[in-house]
Image 1: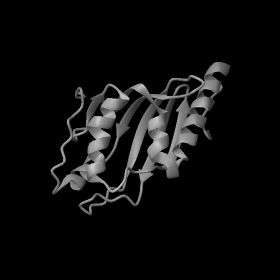
Image 2: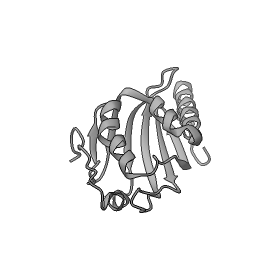
Image 3: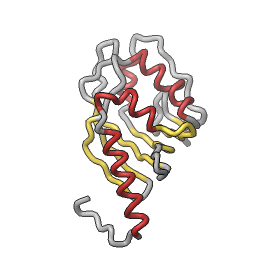
Image 4: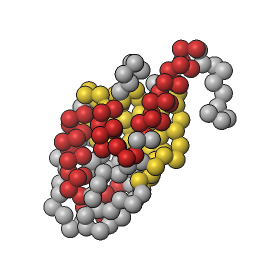
Length: 162
């Protein structure tokens, strides 16, 4: 990473950082297979935190909870789940930060769903790497516009962020 001084990292930390970065870069490069690649990369015991005060904000305690409470209702709102166009990836140890954009995505009501996302991602560091935690930020106004005129509701998070 240009401009990043990694001299303070041990060999083990440097190796973790490289593995994490490679895993995330490979995952986010699979745009044509994103609908399969992304869910496969999530650990079953995933913790997903969506910041803000939107209908999907809060804490989800498993991959299944996030799929049921967010992804399934999203399929009713948008033409397709957004595939990422990566702007930046930063990694340190088991953590990565991904700034990405979805482009060309419309809601079924015609509203644009193009927006930037920022995800703080923690991996488990195992040989078969999985994502165990995501802390996410997005544009809640885009979600509100996409929901206009629909009867779609989100069951809500298992717990809200204070």
